[in-house]
Image (tube, rainbow, N blue to C red):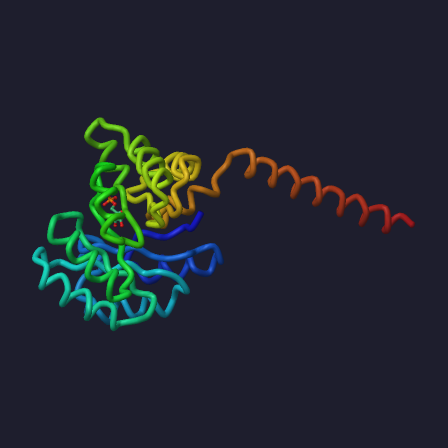
Length: 224
Ligand code: E4P
């Protein structure tokens, strides 16, 4: 499973990248806004220079021509750029046209498996089901991942399932079990994947015992 961070924060991306397990980055207009007064294209370039993997950057036009214009200029920033296109009618047309031009795409704002079916037929490279936001409205985000996985499997679509809007490690675990190809998550959720109290307790015990062993060796050497 590929692991992406869902952030536009360069320090977080750098730190995640230094762990050696980062496969890519997803951004969206809200995450970019959090970075304050930055130049979007320059910022995307900086992210691409940090990460050796796919970096999603989103268009903000909602008409076909506008999406295509933005997609072309985003794709020119860096070879790692994947153009994020919203799952609306004009977006489906743009996905098809970009696929024909060989520009990689991530179809975003997916909330149903029938939407995901259309995105795959249009040639999207990634589909981003927003599982946390589905859970937020008392529905089940994981069922969405399972349905998409089943449908893509039934028909041999090669669109990758990118589990998005991940809020906690259980979302990551269940996405992996359901066969999602990628999970994108906030940096703090990535760190939480490491957490286990028995690891902390076990390490503490090992280090205490090691200290006692060293002290005992030293004491014995002193007596000899
Ligand atoms: C995915 O690419 C989106 O950027 C993201 O996962 C949205 O998550 P949110 O629901 O936490 O905003």
